[in-house]
Image (tube, rainbow, N blue to C red; front, top):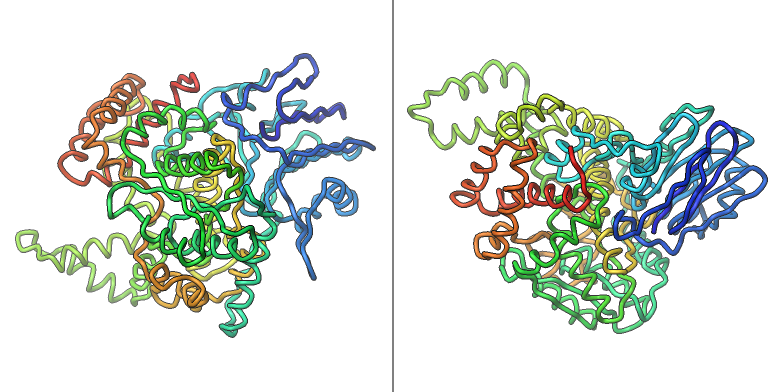
Length: 602
């Protein structure tokens, strides 16, 4: 079970727990539920310390920033840092951690998570107490805390396929964003960002940057303390192959790798994983997922998340972790984060193209080009005109809202999708306000840096890391992220944007830097990702169709989604793009499964 505790805010009394057990509040006792029921991962690294008015809970593997070397941060050194500097000591803390500090002498409580949001911390503030934990559900189900569902967060899930911070699906429970601390003094809460990256724009010598990259990657893998029971996820992409290559240098040989296939060439990267295994002399293990695997594990996936979570690639990640456990590996290294710190996602190039239009002189755009395209006769609507119209429409949407033009909710319309009563209870524009807050907080004006920083929140902390952390906990496997080691992240921010990604050349610097280290076939391969062909399986597997259609039938009764919309979506999935619409069928079916597994009513 993960971090969980209670700190009083008015009497100076504090109490905190780890794992199973009870904590006493003023008039009631709380028992933390079983980890399998609450979705809290097992964390053997949780430490506690108490004395001289100070009580600390620390989860994870924090390290101290600084030169000449970064070192592990013990709970004793954290306590010393707090006593010397107060909350400002967090500026020197990195690695992965969730932290709770209660200082009864100063009448202060501090909650914080690591700069990249690998660990997780949720909390609620009562009149006389702060209750916090790794699981929003565990906090919400404590006595004196309401477990009322936040309908706005349910809509956020439908849009984003997860619930972005700082909200949770529970109305009275919040969660911390990366690099953020909550400070409660005299019963009042304030949120502060204690760390921000320093994005540099000055060009530096390629050889210098290349040397820094490999030094950082080697430090990152060494700091995971690989042993005979350590292996690695291997998709065959740049990041997982890089991690495997470094692991083969600094860890026990041969390195053990674990890969997932899907049986469809457009999704399957097993051939590239095999290339990496041959190149680095690794022992590879593979499993090919079929539609029946979804039927077997669908409810289990819904159970482990404390909030609705609709990223379908959780399933292959789970089977990969389970495969590792079956082969005696209880620690996996993952390549997550590489695309978001070294510019590998296709949208980075796409948005550069749209931004070009915004630099066209206004008189030409508004006075000539747009009127011409908008008033072009529909009866002779030529392909170039349609293309130009679509381009202009998207280009005129500012970032980050433009990133959601692909979204099913935006394309088909929230009013068409949502039951009238549910629609009346939420604000369909609210998610864009939260997105804009994150975007505007970027400590750089460079477009690429803004997109990367935004994805550190939405793609990594709220999505990919939650996916991997939870499914690895389900498989009882520890996971580490060398690409998110502070040395690697800090190194990436020292690469000027036009060096990292000149024009629309994704991962340009990284590909140049690893040339000669990784096989050329991997460096120049087409990007696949780590998704799964759910929409295609749904068309082929009767058992899977029964499962999904049954969940959708039950969801119709909840007055969240219009029945007519579900019918339309099923028809679009069958008649048009099975891959695109299949993703949203998964999102809806998983929402219903989550509500059932967690016994939740709206």
